Length: 215
Ligand SMILES: Cc1cc2nc3c(=O)[nH]c(=O)nc-3n(C[C@H](O)[C@H](O)[C@H](O)COP(=O)(O)OP(=O)(O)OC[C@H]3O[C@@H](n4cnc5c(N)ncnc54)[C@H](O)[C@@H]3O)c2cc1C
Image 1 (spheres, rainbow, N blue to C red):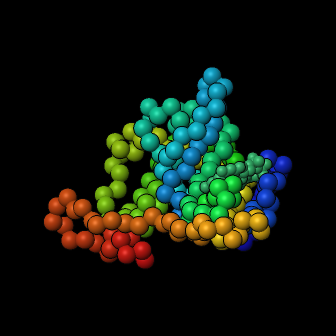
Image 2: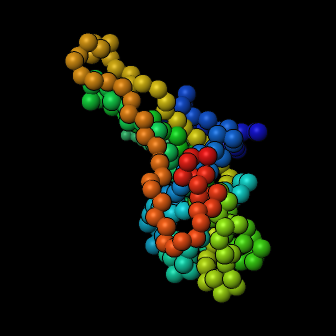
């Protein structure tokens, strides 16, 4: 796959060796991250960043929610947005406090937001968001009816530029600190499902079991 388009605003300058514009890498991070943070200027021109669920379909990121949402109302009008999604992979504990860090994979993207009014595109967004949470869930639950579709605002962000950045590996301590008697290494971190909490006696479907077992 080709690299995502970039310009000066999406060029990684700080530690560029950790950066990438590879679309496959960018897509994988966006798809694995359960949430993203959407940054935009409100109607008063003040910056705000809002966490929300997203789903990617090709080069479009979909958001949905109540039509009363300030974020979705503001983004109706072809606004420029910046979105970030982050996965934390490990706590990096160095000998020195200075070199403590996190292992991570992150994406920063820029795009323009538009309101989705077409019923088919709205359905695509709904399905993608449910599938983003738990693959297989769109076939394992009731689709939205007309009233629910009308009562939900959907925003599409056409991805114009994007970058990924990641840190992997052990801490990097200064030579002079290597013999200090402090534990050093990485505590791996991941999202793991807990025990299921069923609401009724419906048998547990495969897509729930698969998510639970990490497949
Ligand atoms: C979980 C996590 C923890 C972090 N902790 C710290 C910290 O404590 N201190 C710190 O200074 N930095 C931290 N970073 C790195 C931080 O995200 C920035 O990359 C860094 O601060 C440099 O910012 P900058 O604006 O100077 O980068 P620049 O390189 O000037 O940014 C230019 C462009 O590069 C792209 N870019 C920048 N950062 C990222 C990114 N993380 N992912 C994808 N694209 C990016 C954007 O398009 C941005 O506009 C952390 C990152 C993550 C994901």
